[in-house]
Image (cartoon, rainbow, N blue to C red; front, side, top):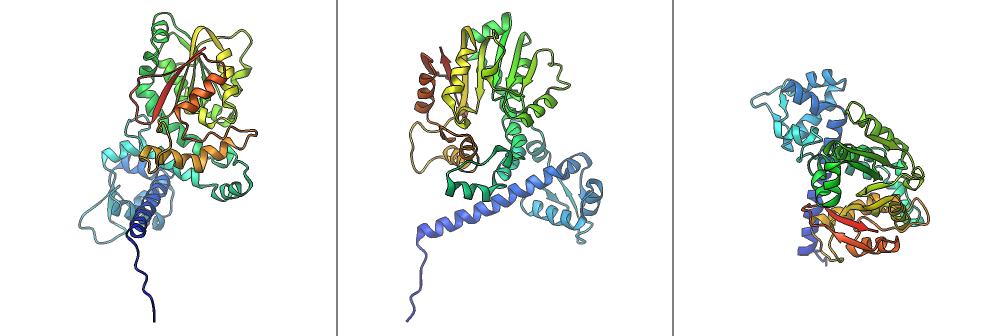
Length: 361
């Protein structure tokens, strides 16, 4: 006698969810391939192309390109020419809106870098599994394509919204507009925040600090040709090593406190860097105030980031606070208090992803 196993409703629902997630994961990987090889850019610039022509123009193999084009078409990312029977002659095109989302990194609709970042998180999966067993961290250098991906994911925020964040500070906005000032952009990464801050306030000088030398090299490349080199500089250094006597009217830390092995020490350094009347502006993840399960899409996204990237890289340096991406407001407030700040204000800034804190000495 045999017993037939009938899937429960919850098992069936999870099966469908994982199936959909698998398709989505393949979409991300193939999007990354298309961006890295210049396939999308060539389609955008040249219009509808066959696999043979696209391969010739990009220096790639026709058979791989044909399979990629067909995948992109059945996934509704590209459009396939109707009526063409010969697969080698069938032409494919990139809709204008998709080109903007995939290739224009300053567009509010930009998503191409997100695909790059998520794919990059998976690259050192075996090292991460080993870290789960050992309790050690995973080096930031193990995620090579995440540097650019993360930088470009955040870039539209800096281009379109950063000035409004400074405006919400009140005094600093008024001073920067009237007479200028000095800003230290701590954990500046590839520098887009520093560049856009200087662009928004033509009288302000910005020093970007980051310990990751490759990120600072990217920042200097991004600065070149911007016309802002006389007011922006990047230093591959700890902000605590700022030149003696240099004081800043504002210190910014964008999406980095939760990544820091020693957040309290970094915030202490930021406080010491302030000129009289200066404040620290922190932007970090807009997660729920307390853990709840199930969570919304933002919570799921942030925990995914945390498991795959933020927590393991923060634990590479020991001792580590091991904060994780889902940093609750009370955790941020506790770090600020321990660092010697007298007050932490949550600013009334409308943003789907980040929460903004003003730290007052």
